[in-house]
Image 1: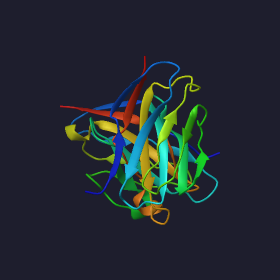
Image 2: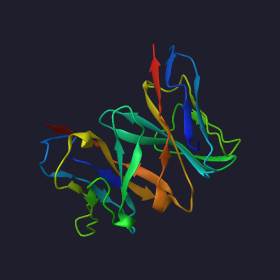
Image 3: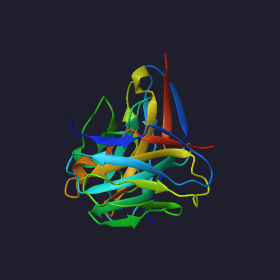
Image 4: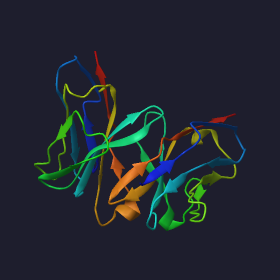
Amino acid sequence: AQRVTQPEKLLSVFKGAPVELKCNYSYSGSPELFWYVQYSRQRLQLLLRHISRESIKGFTADLNKGETSFHLKKPFAQEEDSAMYYCALLSFQKLVFGTGTRLLVSP
Amino acid sequence: DGGITQSPKYLFRKEGQNVTLSCEQNLNHDAMYWYRQDPGQGLRLIYYSQIVNDFQKGDIAEGYSVSREKKESFPLTVTSAQKNPTAFYLCASSTLTGIKTYGYTFGSGTRLTVV
């Protein structure tokens, strides 16, 4: 079955520290993966998609098929990065979401 | 201004009552989805529709019903059969051809509280 696992409910770091939000998936085909972010009082929005191999707001994510992972990374966290982050897998034209990780960046 | 609109933002319901949540989009998206967001459980799919007059059950459809009479609209009814309806409900839409590139567009959500 298709499944997305985000093992950390909460990740707390200091400003300027590196950040890695973990995402593992199980999927029988070739995966299409996304990261979504929800800032306080804002709607859920797309942050990254793996097919683009892009860097948005300093975040990157690399698909590792061997480890079935799609971890989200940023070398230097900023206070404005504090938000809820969801990893999602596209399966039969629908997104399957992980349980989310709350990132708190302290000054 | 294109987008997806959910209303109302907050909704209170007495036990035993049905209630309907509205979701409207003017993005000309083919597909629409309803998710339920609970703390620690992420987003769980309730229903989805990829074409007018057709919809499919998601993972937690029991106690919910939907309709898709127009492309722009996908209302969700929370019935009295839903055992734990208090939650934050999110509506989303997407194109079918562009979903790999653009993913979903989300509404701002409706917080339903059963009193």
